[in-house]
Length: 365
Image 1: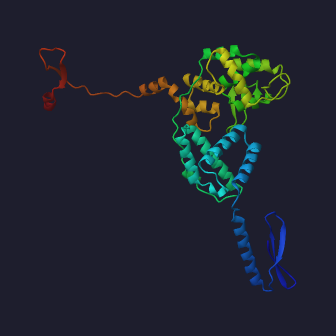
Image 2 (image 1 turned 30 degrees about the vertical axis):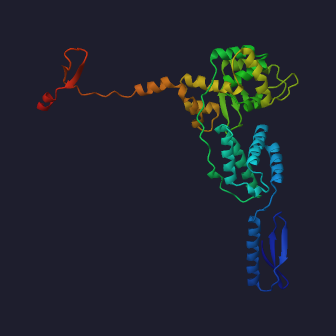
Image 3 (image 1 turned 90 degrees about the vertical axis):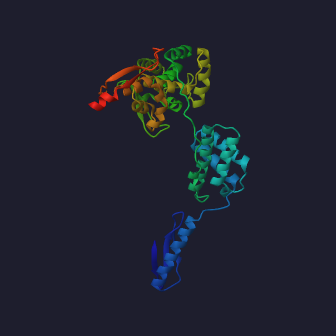
C-alpha cells in the first residue's frame, strides 16, 4: 500500500477487507497533501474495521450459534447450550444480541439458584452462555465485555465412588461377550474415558511394549497406559475377530459406537450383575485402586490424563495410612527429664492425685 503518481494526480493503493487490491484518486497534485490524505484514509479504514455491526437480531444469532454447535461441538454441549439459553429467555427475552450483558447473565444465574438447580449445573450453564457470547465477540457481532465479573458458585468436592475387586468380577461375569468385557477392563484396568474407549484404534495397542497409546481427547496431552494381564488377554482375544481399525465395534458389521451406546447398554449389564454402577465409575475404580495401593498421586494423575494434579486430589482421602506413616516418620526429639514429686490432694481418695514439679529443688540448682 502507498501513494502512487499517475500523470499529475496522486493515487492511493490499498487492499480492501476481502484482500482485493484497490486504487482511488486522491485528487491532488501535491505529494505532501496526497500523503496526508492517504494517512487519513488509513485511519478511517481502521475505524471502520474496528466498528462492530450492531442491532443483530437475537433469533438470528441463535440460529447461527446452533448451526455452529451442531457442526463443531458434540451433542451434549449443544443440548446444554440450548438449555442455558432457555433459562436466559425465562428471565428476559432479548430482542437484539447486544441486550445480553454480564448483568443479565448474573440475573440468570440467580434465577437458576432460586429454582433449586445444583451449583455444578449452574456453573456449566453459565459457562455455556459466556462461551456463546465469546463466540459472538470473535465473530465481531458485539463489542467485547468483561465476563470475568461473573464468578462460579462454590461446589463441594463430591465423594468418589468406586468398585471393589469383587464387584468388578461380578460385572465381568455379567458381560454378554468379550467385546463388553474389554470395555469394562478398559475403564477399570486402564482408566479410559468413554470418548477414549470408542476412539481407541488397534494401532494404539502396543503389544510389544505392553501399553496403550491414548491420543488427545478431552485434554491436549497424549499418554501411555500399561496393560494388565487380564486387559492384554482380552485385547488379544478380541483382535482375532477385528473388522476394522477401531478396537470397539457394535455388531458383526463393525458399526461405530457412540458414547450414548456405551452408557445405555452398560446399564443392563450392571443391573444383571446386581451392582449399582455407571460407566465412569470404572475410571474412578482404576484411580482409587492405584491410590489405595500406595501409588503417588502425581503418577495417578499422569495415568488418568489429568491436566493438573489438583484434579487428582479427589482421591487423596484414600491415603489415610500413608498420611499417618508420613507424620510418624518425623524425627523424635530428646526431652529434658525433670524431677517430679507425687503429692496427695485428697487423703480420702487415693485416685485423686496430681504430679507437680518440686520448684524449690529446681531453684536451688
